Length: 90
Image 1 (cartoon, one colour):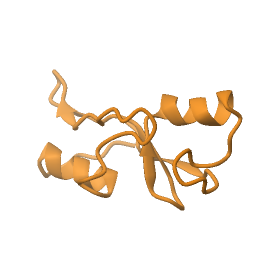
Image 2: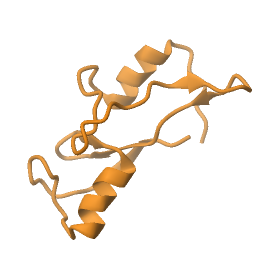
Image 3: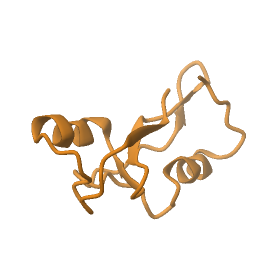
Image 4: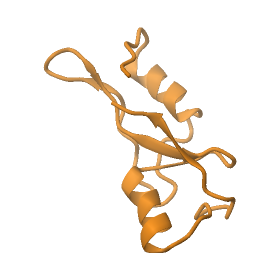
C-alpha cells in the first residue's frame, strides 16, 4: 500500500521509527535512511523491521541474517522472542 505523507521527511522518519532517538539498526548500527522523493516526486521509504515486544529496529538483511544464518529466534540485544513486522514497505 502507498501512503502519501503531508509532513516533512524528518517528521515522517520519526513516526516510522517510533522514536526520534532510534535512528540506527540495532545490529549493524547503520543509520536508517530518511524518506526522500524520487524523480517522479513520489516518496521512497527504506524498509525497516522491528521486534514488536521489545521495540528494537533493524535493517531486513541484518535481522534475517541473525534469525536464519545464526538460527536464532530472539532479539540480538535483549533476547526477547522475535516477532518481526514491517514498519513500512515502499
